[in-house]
Length: 78
Image (cartoon, rainbow, N blue to C red; front, top):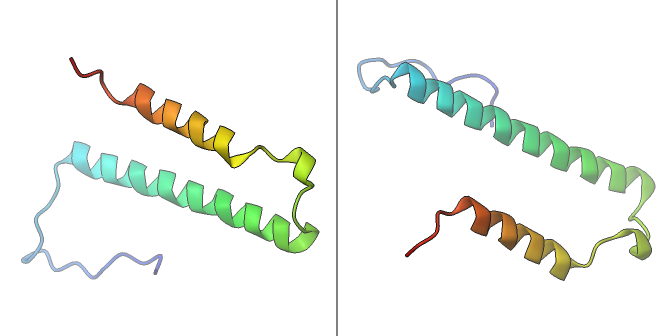
């Protein structure tokens, strides 16, 4: 993907409200930050190899923690 914005063809585009545009920019910034963190981890693995098994968390624990976070974000259903 390019860092350059798409050419502006304002006749064919629907402009966003300022709050919506800010939300989209914030989402883009979070997505970019997550991609940068992921790239950093991959570069570390490429440079230093995989971490020792003893230093890693089992995937089942990671899955359960992630599911707990997702459940906390979702409002309770009656």
